[in-house]
Length: 361
Image 1 (cartoon, one colour):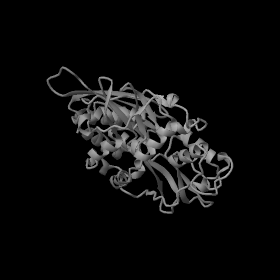
Image 2 (image 1 turned 135 degrees about the horizontal axis):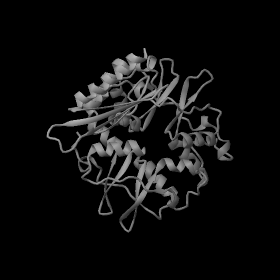
Image 3 (image 1 turned 90 degrees about the horizontal axis):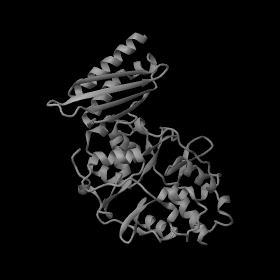
Image 4 (image 1 turned 90 degrees about the vertical axis):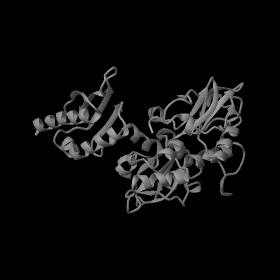
């Protein structure tokens, strides 16, 4: 997988817009095509990208205005870039749709959806539960809250879905960023919303008027592969996760799942981040080593976070690696190891962490 090139999975028929396009036109295009990122061109050359979520940060904009202030410079890809590099850029930037540029021209676009279609059968997803990757800090709404409040929460938290709860804390629906924007901008354009009951100022309208009651949240007990398959089938960016009583406990997002492929936040009790020249197999090995020790890391050593970094030593006849681990808690520990092969250096670092835990008993 590491060697697969962007040119193999990118969408070649790219939807682009002119920098002179209006906000309303671009939003309508995004809605009709079901896309969240659109490259902007001028004289057929790439000048930037418009991202759907940015519209929620400025709901006072006139829909007839040009999109100038919403054009941003995002990381771009080359057709010769690898999928590994693409995943790293997406996770680090938080942008899940990247334009592919060749000599200043847009020749394709790659989304996390394209990557997951390629990787859905990768064994990495069998090693995680939905609870491993959910976003546990998320906003909530009540039916009587205003659409203005929903828009503000969506902008601050940068989320697609906000669960709506009843007085018992159970989920009765959800509000989508898509519906918030569609309603607000249709009001500005002088159109009525989804119901004839929409009257008066947009800020006085209630969440109950636009929430989706037919949403199907992800259950916490679902295997991560199954949950991901559901997201892909619905072409959904995220889903609310509920417990067996129907109470929301987190948000499952595709970009967060993608972070697993970069080795980020793979621990349950201790925050774990992995970077550098790791392969998927070495990430899985490290996760299994952490799983066996995590209770000791958390309860004995009082670690709250461990950051692992691995680097392949260039110019060596054998595959020699350097690895470091920085553990944070009541005290900070930094260790390093050098060995032949990823597996050996990982085990050496873990043994040194074991020694630290033993001394702290």
